[in-house]
Length: 262
Length: 348
Image (cartoon, each protein chain N blue to C red):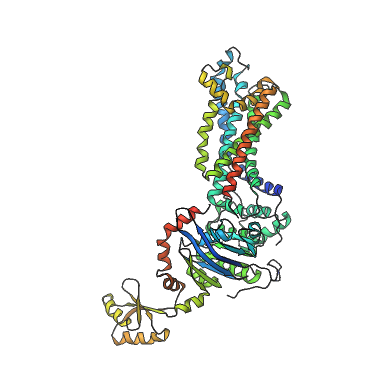
């Protein structure tokens, strides 16, 4: 036999290559995460512009304030994409095909996330471009825009890994899609529409404060409307990395249960 | 078809003396709230042999393959594949085997060539060799022209052939094929048989083939194991198994449908009656083929005119019938439910 066991980076490279190909060949996976967040941004920006008149509102225009929203909404699509792909592989038996190769578990997880990160990159470029076209000035400058990209990709990876966890645990695309409304509820019960200190309803302010999505949005938003806010960035990156780490551990355990090969 | 243990000249086969056989002892697999899908199977497949594992749906064929290919741990028993213990040395087993499972699990969005590249890459084959090997295998299974088309547009036969090519990419010395021709047309089926026979004959690859087609086991396998309800009920060369049953049967259809009863009475003189289609009668001949002339003379003497008269040599279905009391096709229908249960329990 001429075959040897492929090193982990090689396995990751091939699985990432497959994930990127699959993503690029499915317009349905790319277009909605681009169009819907921009559509919602346009609606929010035109309908809620009066909010900028509230005392203490932190941005001059609502579109600048709300620009973090599509980044977050796009990440929710990452959950769907990553989870559905892995559930599909389990359902079709492709997972068994992979299990019969020397593939190691981590390479599957990282490989599957590659497609999600590709979409995340395209989204970040599109959302930032749309914001700039609408007259938004990035207060943290070019370096801040790069950090914005980085944070949005970490958030994409974190939410993508939640999708992997559910996909691996259940093997069901329907179960993964069931997460979508739940994620949307989390998004709307966060500080996405208003800063937490301007939310008049106490219960809503409390929920938004304990909702980790608020800190992700505030981290993204700080780079757009504030500049360099160390606390917001630390919380944004910290929460995103924590979600990623917890989901990754869960996904690894689920993968171990799924990959029962001897 | 004889077993082949010598290495071929092209160097793609196992080294001379390589242990590419399969041995299993007391292999058992139980599923929660279900019957024993596999109930103490002992197997010994010689290097280079084509072993046909024949049984109806739900008999335990796929579960056995899942265990032998390390995808499913056995509840009890042991097995060695290509000299490696399936429980203790799974990675070495997987390195030595090629597997085409029951459903050709392919990515509809990738092309045939991309599948080859992915499979070769995960096996650690260098890219230039992977490309060469991919082209060679795609050509060998007749997919060279379709190599750059997405698999979503392939026919069932093309998918099966790609599945076989993928199983061979890392030059395995043992090949597991789980019902490789189910759902294929005759032409595709024969093309696949030819390739499997060539692999065994020219490359010395051991082939473990599950099937529910009698013809497939009969014409392709060196030896056949018949499995029913998780147990191996018979094993041997197709010729030997049929010889064990021994006696041929004769089936006749009278020209006048109203004379079936008279026909049955005449035939009963020559052997035990067999179930057959309405309007016909059949018996297992007590003294073998030589009696056919007597049967014809007997019918003639009674003035019975025949619309059809057939002599059936013993088939593997007769073997199955003799060993289990059921015909293979009927058993498949009866055990469909059990089979579905077993498949659900096997990780997808």
